[in-house]
Length: 268
Image (cartoon, rainbow, N blue to C red; front, side, top):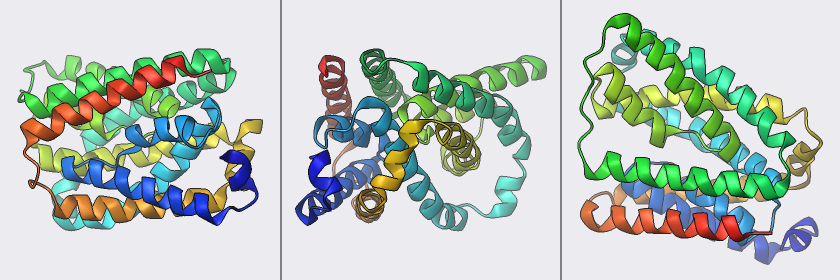
C-alpha cells in the first residue's frame, strides 16, 4: 500500500480517510483521540515500517490535538485551568525530557526490536485503559515533596511512551493527574492537552533529526487526509458518547488493543 500511496493513489487516500474516521469514532466515544488504535493500522494495513509509522502517528496526533484545543478550552474555562499551572509544570518537567529520550531511543532501535516494544506498550495502554474506565481512580494522599517527585517521574515515563508510540499520551496523563493531584477527570482531560502538546513537539523535533522523518515530506497528503478523517470521526464519536454502554465498549476496545499488540509483535 505504501507504494500506491507514493504514486498518489486516490483509492488509498479514501481508505486512509475511512480508517481515520473509524479510529476517531472509537476514540471519541470514550473521550480519546484514538492514536493508540491508529498506530497498528499504519503498520499492519498501510505497510509502513515501525519508525515511519511512529513518526506519521505523531504528526497526525499533533494535528488532532491542535484541533481539539478550542473545544477543550470551551468546555473548561481558561481561568479554571490556570489555577492548576503548577500541575502542568510539574508533569512537563519530566515529560519533555522523557519525550526527547524516547524519540532518541526509537530512532536507534532495530525495526524488529521496535515492533516488540510497541507491542508491549499497546498492552500497557490496554491495561491503563481498562483500569481507568472500569474502576474509579482515587487520588493518593502524598506529602508535597513526594507528589512533586512522583509527578516528574510519571511525566518522564509518559513522555517516553508517548514519543515511542507517536501518541498524545492522554490515556496515561488523565489518570495520573487524577491520581497524583486529586483533580476532577473533566479538568484533567484539558490539563492533559497542555502537557501533551509541548511534549509531542519535543519528540517531533527529535524525530526531525532522523533520516526517517522524510516520510512526512513524502506522505504529507496521506497525513492530512487520515488526520482529517480522525477529526471528523472524533466529533461523531463525541456525539455518540453514551450510545454504547461503557461496560460493553471498554472490553471491546481493550480486546482490540490486545489483538493489535499480538499482530505488531508478530510483524516482520
